[in-house]
Amino acid sequence: MSDNGTPANGQQSAGGKRTARVILGVLAAALIAFCVWAMSVYAQGGDPLAWATGSAAFQTTADETDQATSQDTASLQESPQTTIVTTDDVYTALASLQFDGTDVSLEKDAVHVVLSADGIWVEEASSAPASDMVLACARRSAALASWASEQGVGIPNVTWICEDGAGAVRMAVTMPTNGAPATGDLATLLSAAAGYGISGDAYAQLDAGDIPQFAGTAPTLPDGSAVTVDADVTSAGENLSAADVATRQKDVSSGEASVAGSGSSVRAPAAGSGGSASATGSQSQGQPSQSPTQEAKVRATVTIDARADGGSSSSYAVSLNPGATAYDALVATGASVNARSTAMGVYVAAINGYAEKDQGGESGWKYAVNGSYPNYSAGACTLSDGDAVTWVYVTSA
Image 1 (cartoon, rainbow, N blue to C red):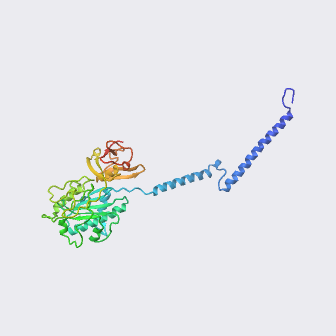
Image 2 (cartoon, one colour):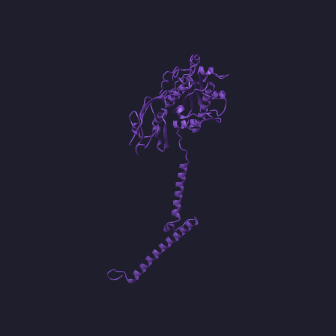
Image 3 (tube, helix red, strand yellow):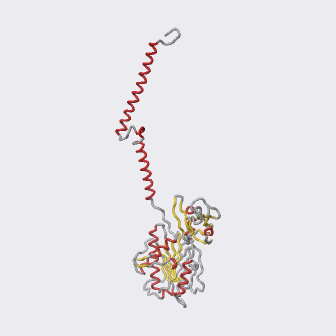
């Protein structure tokens, strides 16, 4: 060391060499480690230089992500969609209805349909002779019950009501959808029914053999009350006048004189009706009352207001099973409902032909319960007894 404390040149040279050796040793160790890692990646089929080329490893990760996304998409596409049956669907089914290869179809303007979670009700007027009418009712109820079962939405029964020109019930039959016969004669079909009744006037015209006039549980209306079927032979007999039946058919199909009504809204029979079209009571003349045991019902009023789309406003009284929703109440009115299942629940796109976006991009249907508008699907809004449900068409959100 010099007098002022500065290292001598020899000592500086020795220190620099030691530092260089340390740096070289570190670099050599790093290179060895990289080589070992690279050989390991290469042995596994990877590209150790992918970080520099932007290929291989990063693309593999991207491919795997794309593959997973594709699999997720395929899974979503393959997942079954929720099926919703509307009254329009029932009318369409009726228009092409067949029983064991025989055409038993009816057009929309010949019938009135009520649809709810409790079942399907079909009401018609017929001038056919009693034997043909009874067989047609049995076949049609069985064929429609089979169709309803195929929809997989849990519709339990089909009730078919046939009237004469005066509105008197000629026959009513309730056919379970589970196990409805696809073939068979009248006796076979009626034995499969949950219950039926044939009016005294119609029964008197039948060569019924061992077929009883009444059997099983009395068919009921949407409100749970029994359909009145007069067991007596009346002095006036059945009104099978083609003109009167055509008028009754028109009134029934429009819902203006419907025994089944809309939901539990019961309409009066046509003016001048000489027969019984009452929606209450039970089978008469010594026939035992067979009203089914009814679970406590949830009664609600439903208003459908389509005035903003050029329609009208109508109100209905409906009777529902406990746990029923605002959507169930809408369906129970018998309105034609176009709805679909979404991630947020059931979405109502159209009611009675008044559809979303008819009046602009933000127009459509909203619902309220007791004046309040829930912020969730009507299919998730459970009703309480006495609730007032309003479905209103709006022109903006």
